[in-house]
Image: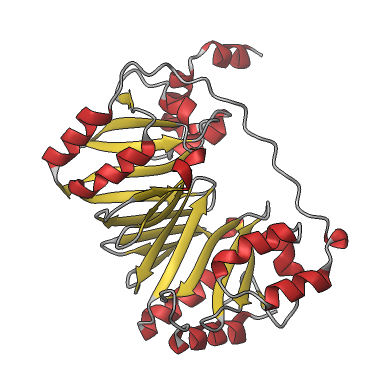
Length: 358
């Protein structure tokens, strides 16, 4: 009882420091979860180094083009996706609700989920690391942009001068929303779902099709049948996960891929080949110069190969879902709209299925 009382008298910052002493190197997201607070709450417990940004996030992102190289980071509970590149023509659409950048930085941003933004400075050895960090209305981290050694410092500083706003009030965070239950599989009209699926002409219409059929993505994948979906073993004695298998395959074959990772506020995409792969405990990692991926495959319960028709032919993905039914990572072959899917990618997926299909 005395220990509990002593802990309750400690500030959040003190509890965080104690946790870091017990677990050096613990990431802020994991520390926040351990302490029962949001990442933004924990960040704001710092005495300094956190400065509010104007909530004009679409305009700020559009102004990133002049800054040069940055490292952008998007993550969910299982997967971290990092790309180092420069922005090219970030545009805002849908009356400010959505934003888009296409190029080496390839993101789809749902700005209606972005509620708070901060410049964060941290000591990293003899240098100071600077980042722009964005959060939803209950303090969950959505996206981070880090200044790098090759960032245009003058342009970065001008951006900060235009978008820092110390008059922003301390945020009043909302309670995290209650997770919506998954669809009742028995209530889904599977015949109608299969008809709609088979008539898709564009994978970008997929979410609207799911909504029309009143079904979440994973339930649809579970119901649609073997014509369109193959379930993969999550691991075997020889293979840690389907992600290990497919990444090792495409590293060997040099087949270019697309890797999508997202959360409710953003989807971040990498397109290219992968080279430096490393398994570390539960984590499967890509550690390349301009792209890093860190996937805790122990937290990815369900893996599927999913096929969807389009006007350009079949589009094939490898998809990983966590225990809550959230899609946390998707892999495609490199493809642009109007082009058919790569036969190289189709061969890689066939090999994956042959190795791991249940």
